[in-house]
Amino acid sequence: MALEINSLSPGRRIVDEFGRPTVDFYRWLQEVVDVTTTETVLSTEVLYAELVIKNTYGDTVSAASKAKELNKFGRTANADSGVRTTVAPFQAAIVNETFVSTNLVDSVVSTNAGDTQTLKIEGHTIYASGNLTFKVQSATLNGQTEVTLGTPLARVTRAYVANSGTFNSPQAALAGTVSVYDNTDGVSAGGVPTTAAATKLVIEAAKTQSEKCSTTVSSTDYWILTGYEYSITGSGPNTEANFQKQIRDVANGGVWRPLGPEISLESGALPSASGLYRPYLIVPKNHDFRVVVTTNTANSEVTAEIQGVLAEIV
Image (cartoon, rainbow, N blue to C red; front, side):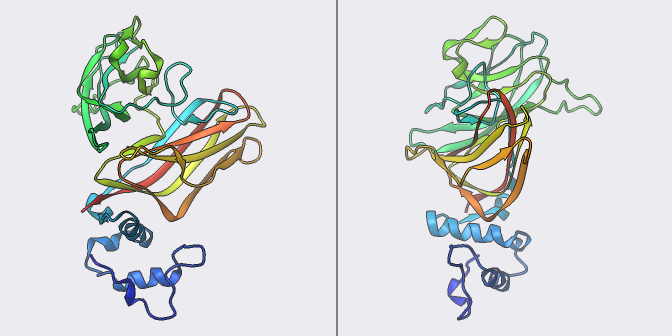
C-alpha cells in the first residue's frame, strides 16, 4: 500500500515542531487509506510507525501481514543500588545476561529430579553476518539430568510448560528451578549449571513460565512498542527505582543505548506507572532489547512489561 505524502493539502502539517505526527496527519492518513484494506484495522499510530521505518531504515513492513503481538514482562528481586539490573531472574548473583555471538545455548535442566514436563522454548539462532532467526522448539525435561536442545540458540527469550494435548489433564507446574544454558562448562550435582553466567533464562520453581523483560528482534521483523507498565512490588517504604529501555544493534556491533528517558518510581508515593507511547517507539531488526532498573536499596523487587506489535518486512 503506497501512501503519497504530497497529497496532504497545503496548510496541513505532517509533524509539529517536536517531530510528532499532528492531528492533520492522522486525518489525512485515514482519508488516503483504502477502507477495503486490512491495514485499516490498525491504528494510525502503527501506520505512521511503518512509514517511519521505511523512511529511516529503508524497509517496507506490515504489521497486518505479521498479525502478531509481542508483550515482554519480567520480574527481579535483585534490583540493587547503583547496579543496572535486567528485569528478569538469573542464576545466583547474576543480574545481566552474558550474550554470546554463536549458537552456544544448547541445554536445559531442572533442580528437581521429578520434573519431566515438556517445555516450549523460544529464542533466536545467529549467523556469521549477525542476522538473527526466530525459533520455537520443544524439550522434555529429565529432572536433574541435562537435556540437549534440538536446535542450539544464541538467544533465549521465553520458555513455558507446554500444553499436554489432553483435555482436563494439564502438565504440573515446575517443582524445581529450570535453566536454559550454554553447556560448555556442564552442570553440577543438583541440576545447577556449573557457570552461573552460562544460564541465559530461568523459570523459577513453582511457576510455569519465564519472566524475562528482554527480547531480540529477528532480521525480518521490527517491533513497534505501544505501551509500558513498571512497578515496585517488594521493598522498604522509601525505595526508589529508575527504569530504562535499552536497545543494541547486534549485526553492526552496537552498544547498549537508551530508548527514551528513565522513568522513576518511589514505593511510598508512586509505586507503579503505566502509559502509551505517542508516537509509538521502534526496535529495529537484528536488535537486542531489555529493560534495566537501578534502585537506592539492595534486593528490591520490581516488575516491568512492554507491549507492542511486530511488523514483518514485505
